[in-house]
Structure formats: structure tokens, C-alpha cells
Image (cartoon, rainbow, N blue to C red; front, side, top):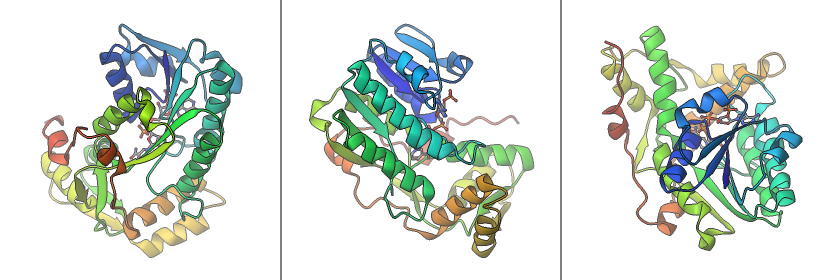
Length: 295
Ligand SMILES: NC(=O)c1ccc[n+]([C@@H]2O[C@H](COP(=O)([O-])OP(=O)(O)OC[C@H]3O[C@@H](n4cnc5c(N)ncnc54)[C@H](OP(=O)(O)O)[C@@H]3O)[C@@H](O)[C@H]2O)c1
């Protein structure tokens, strides 16, 4: 039995499907079982629980041999979400896995995870990685670039609601995007691959795209003109600093926007694809061909 924490999310949904399709029994850990409604079927269990609650996490481990953590608290409304979910929640999962004798642990981190990153999320991801590395579990860490599906969702919803897009920064920085299906295929393979124990694998996609590119294509798809507005970097810097004490969630999003617009967001070495040949390579056009918007 494999426990997938975050099994209801963009990536987690695809991991659960990939594992279930290969006949592996899966248990999804979620705060709201209704969010796993699209995943129920043979070999898939749903378990109610919050990774911030050690007792709930321990209860989810019964009969589990491997854990995949695809949780994240960064995008929620709780300003302390990343610390509580990505760090403390993952630490609860690691401790419960040790106590339950579940030896294998695959952690989804993010590219750029580092102790000295200017982005708090990446520092937190690095700390979560270190806690796992220093456990005696058989660990593998996956560091994906940015998911195409996440940004198609975010920008597409903005266009549906407003008929336009507002980007943080100039939107001209090349960013490596990866398909969540590609990452899910890697994760499903990794859980059953003893040769990948003790490795940290970075995975990206075949394209470096700017947010202007992605937004422009989505606007065309929805029959809108190229109406892209930009919030200037100096404004974002002020927002990130001044709003920190009163609106920390907005400040963190501004901080993320600055990083995405001003730092190297490409992936120089795709260590996952070098290590695991044959993974799918999803492109933006593949996903846009499947997107349907109301006329
Ligand atoms: N999106 C990206 O571009 C990107 C890029 C690089 C790395 N990543 C990493 O990839 C992983 C998956 O990201 P995603 O974008 O697929 O996430 P997502 O769609 O936002 O889903 C987040 C998941 O986390 C779960 N979760 C959040 N708080 C929880 C809590 N307190 N207790 C239990 N579960 C909780 C949610 O489950 P319920 O709501 O059902 O409880 C949900 O399944 C994360 O580790 C993320 O940091 C994402």
C-alpha cells in the first residue's frame, strides 16, 4: 500500500492514477475526502487527515510500505502554510513512516531548493529535504520545475473572469515548464525503483516559455485580444516589503512573482530524464489542444 499525501492535487491526482493503473494499491491522504471523488475506483482508498496533525498522519500509515508526499501549503490563504505543511507536515509524514515501518519515501520538492534561496518556499523545501535525508528511510527527492497545468489553470481562470491577464513583472523571463503527467510518471516509477534510493532528481519539460507566451496563447484560445497587464517589479518590491506584516500571503506572492521574473528559471541539467529514459515530454501545445472553454 502506497500512501499519497497530496493525492488530490494537480500532481497528486496524476500520481494516484499512474499507480492505480499499474495495479498498485493507493491510499490518498486528504483534509476533505470529497476532493478525491474523481479518483475513487478499484485499488484506491481515501483517508481523512491533515498532515499538520501527527496523530492523523500516524493513523493513515496502517499497512503502508511507501509514502509519496505531494503536499504544499504555499498557495493557500494561510500565511504560515508553507512552514506548517511543507516543513512540519512533511516532518510528521517522515516520523510516522519510520514508526510504522514504511521504508520508502518519495518527497516532491521544487527546483531551486536551497538554504540560501531568496525565496522562502525554496528555503522551506530545502529544510524538508534535509529532514528526510537525515532520517534512515530509503528516500528519493524529486525537484520539478513549474507545472504547465498550474499556470494554464491560474491564467485561464483569470481570463475567464476578467477577459484579461495581469502578470507580476515584465513576463519576459524564460521559464522551464513541465507537464504534471511527466512528473507523475517519474514519481510512479521512482517508488518502485530501488536504484533511485538516495538520489535527488531535477525534472523539467522540453520548453522554456515566458509568461507572456503562455498568457498570449490562452487569450487567443478564449477569443480575447492580447490584453496583458504587468505589475512593475519596483511596485512588487514595495508590496513584498510593506505588506509583509499585514498581508503576508500577498507579500509572499509578490516575492514569488519577482523571483519568477528576474532570476534564472531554466533548468540547466535535467537529471531525472538522464537517469530515467522514456518519460513523457508534454508541451504547452499538447495541453492547449485539450483545453475547452465555454463559448
Ligand atoms: N505547481 C507547481 O508549479 C509546482 C512546481 C514545483 C514543485 N511543486 C510541488 O509539487 C507538489 C504538488 O504541487 P501541486 O501544485 O500539485 O499542489 P496542489 O494542486 O496545490 O495540491 C496541494 C495538495 O496538498 C494537499 N494539502 C495541502 N495542505 C494539506 C494539509 N494540511 N494536510 C493534508 N494535505 C494537504 C492538498 O490536499 P487536500 O486539499 O485534499 O487536503 C492537495 O492535494 C508540492 O509539493 C509542490 O510544492 C509544485
